[in-house]
Length: 109
Length: 114
Image (cartoon, rainbow over all chains, first blue to last red; front, side, top):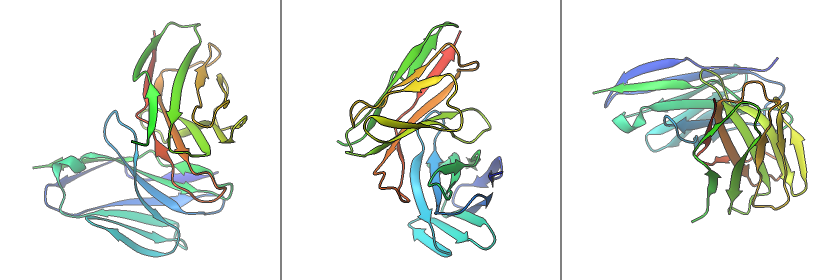
């Protein structure tokens, strides 16, 4: 079967750095997406990786290792507004998105 | 402003009633999707459509129906056959060129069955 694993919840301090991991086992691979979702709202697109390596976008970076079936989202200089759930999703060989359950990130002052 | 709209934001329905959730986009996207989100679970695909007048079942289509008569619109009907309909429903769209493309989401409709 297809599976995406992420930690259920993480806590970090304002101003710090946090890394959210995602491991996957899917039928084929056509890219990995990270979305941010605030409580009760829609997911918003953060990043897309299809090649191995690190993609940086401001305070957010995303890393992919296809051989290990592994990705992480790195958030720097954490702000209170970063408190949200972070969803990892993999596009499989049929170009369908397989979603992880999301990681709830709690930021403390 | 381009975007995806869903209405209503909150919906209450009695058991045994059908209800239709609206989804409209003005992004000129070809593909549209309906997902269901339950606490502690990933998004699950209900139906998707790559082109007008055509749609495909997702992983959990039972108890749901859709139509795609216009490019801009992809309404979802939750029928009385859906055994556990209380959930957060998300509509998304993408350029849908058959390859990897980003999905953009509407604000969602929270359906509660009383």
